[in-house]
Length: 403
Image (cartoon, rainbow, N blue to C red; front, side, top):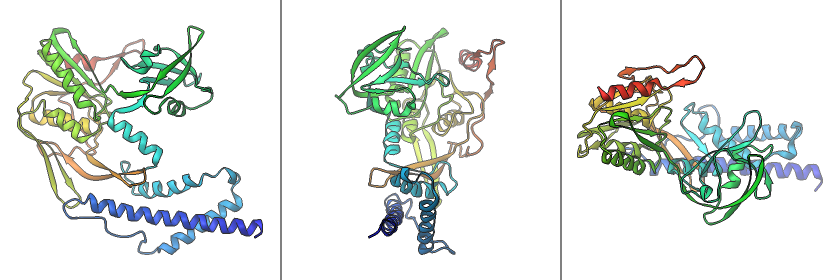
């Protein structure tokens, strides 16, 4: 077989395989919907539209591939796995729903780490300088492998094992540092102009999603950055510690909190709300589901919840419920307005599909989708003459609680 014929044969086999994989993905989607069916409804329809057949799609894919093979300048650099992933990703994104997404294997692993709040690594947060490109340690978790290895805030990381970090994006460097629990990673850092080499033993690290302290006037302050699997225990421990210190009022800060797990936020609200509905959801078939609270841990002290335009999803479930029951006042600016629920669906091959499956409603039955939660006490951020942000929103929340 000559080179041109071999090339054509290889191309045909590749695209037939790609298209077969695409159809398999559609069948997987259908199977997943059968498993996750809501109220008896399930995925209906097929890949072909009214005017376009499956053969039409295959022919067009072959046509596109032929043009790429004939004219594309960097053909040798084509990653065919990425092309196939692109088909799946494009199919999901074409729905026009920003919250329905396909995740390849690498993205799935990162997603699951994010939602669980745990990962195997060294427990240090890093950032990359916009101009310098230097990777700097900005936070070291307490009792983490990084702390035990002597890593400090402000250290500049220039090499991981035998790989230099110069010119490498931050996500890639982080992937070098992460790894299997019990394995070692050697970090080369600069500190005060001195080169230091240290070895950290990777371990399971729990992300800190809750920070808290006692403010003046015995007012507790709890900041929640997101609602992950680990967040409930961290929030409960913070609440109990502040109570033990004689807390007389509480401010819960959900500013810039993008949301997270529905079960996590509802479990947290069970530590605060009276008996009744926490949130209700309605699916495409009109079926409703309610998550309720028995009121056994109702919080009766003065309470304020801080929000802003970046408080979304689970943060809005939290603030909307507190507002509806009148157990606390919402302080800040109107929230993002994401009132829909997504379900993560395992496609069985290390990839996931995240699908919008329902809308949610606050205890009073209101939808905040596209509208957000309006604060009881509206307070915009202000800035000093020097440009430094003054946390007047927090000051106002503390004032509300102390009244």
